[in-house]
Image (cartoon, rainbow over all chains, first blue to last red; front, side):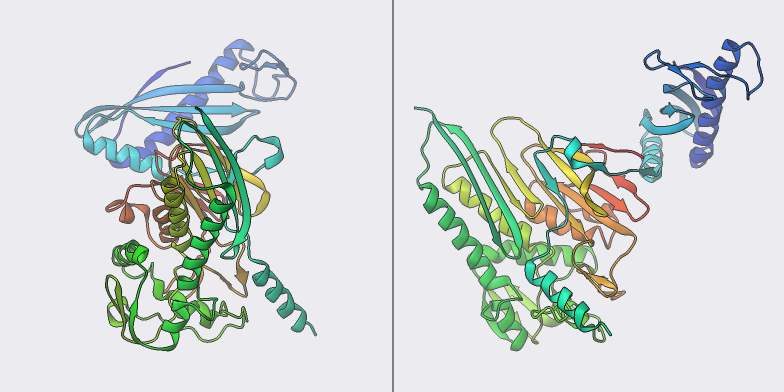
Length: 159
Length: 298
């Protein structure tokens, strides 16, 4: 699903713009569901079809699951620019967000990249035994000497 | 005649666990037998350790900590000093081999006493050292520590030795600092260890003919410190959990991974090519666009 949103914004309001775009995107997704359930109030939808694989999702989610992208146009002091935002919705939670820069002017490119650099994304751990890895990269295992010494000191300092 | 070499060496050295995988499928025989190869690798590592370890009584570093004077550095050490000086200048002294005294005062000394004493700002490079290869003039005795980039430097020495010995496809892994050379364009899938849980990874990096290193404070910890200490604040950075870097050499990747605990990446990007991923204490991340990885987003 792609929709075009025309938003006028200065380069340095790109964060405001992103928030507006996300809001517009989420609202428009919501609008589609409202249409499907015939203008019923927020609280009552009981069965929402999962957009991803057609499984009936018994949860009372407001929004459909799936990946939704929108290309936003905005007006910068240098002219018209574009950016793509993709959100993954799972059980009413945004589980992934990707921003793709489409700026053409060097200044716009710099601002879009700066935004992408600073937009926070969070990670979590996954168990190693569920994955096929060739190697692991992490801090060096402590040498036996380091650990032994630390252990001794902890014991000695006990009352 | 096709020669297939498939060696795996595993051993402890310089306080960490090494795994060397050699997989060659070529028409040329290596000059060395498997045993000779392992012996030569261990000899190379020991030679480096004897010079640059501050934990050995017989090392050059220990001599330098006791007496000023003119010292001869081994021939291979020139890039170690010149790059350390470049990074020292670029980070305005935050990345420094003169951090040794601070580590010792904090308790991370050769005896692992772990008793923190009062810390003082480390000496400035130009006040203390003058390097004109192969001579190192030590103007006042100082504890030098090459822990930030030394392991990566040594991994590169081992990799060069393997290439000189006739091998072209191999992985040298020294406790998670990895050099990967391959004739084929095959990615190595490298798990990015979760510093809060070593049974987990926060993503998978895809590395092809490059080196990847990580720097983290989670393992070597005592009192309020871990082994990365900021020379200006005299404390260990808390807001960064781990930094991974990918570069052409393990030495550069290793050194820059430590630099990223002290400065923003763009400061180092002025002079060096590398990709990075930084994991913050709130589990948010910052990465360069070219850091090829599948991350497990929350």
